[in-house]
Image (cartoon, rainbow, N blue to C red; front, top):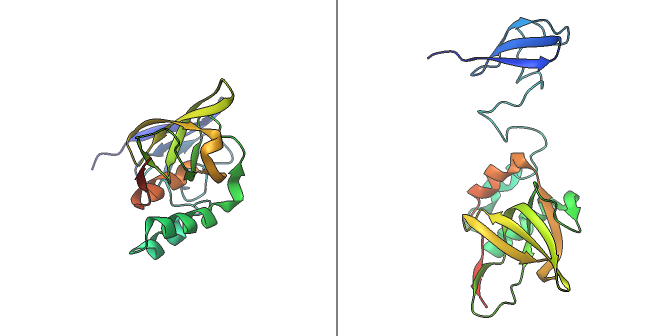
Length: 172
């Protein structure tokens, strides 16, 4: 296997490391020693293990969700991420929540997992646009149609949440 050498660090203090393993091969940064491992030492996140960290609140519940209904899965997911409630989604961040659509004759996801891309006011309502990972497409949501809280989920938790089949598709 070919080794890919990458550069890390900041101006005046840099290091070279093997991308596949994290091993530092050269360093002018006194905080990053030659022979150390940038992944194991927490200097960089390992791209081969994007969710393998202590901040992932979802990882511990994934195996407990097998065979459960989408409603039961959603309850456990919301319990796991309850420490990151937000009143309004912020573009560039990820969210999950319970949603009840009002538009007649549409199919919607009651348990969306989204990457928020935009938020805006239209007439009397606040809307947000997000890429819904369950649909694989962008959707428009009205803020006052969310039920309960909106929960921010961290980027490192997205791949685990995508493994959980908890989308609930309903018709209005």
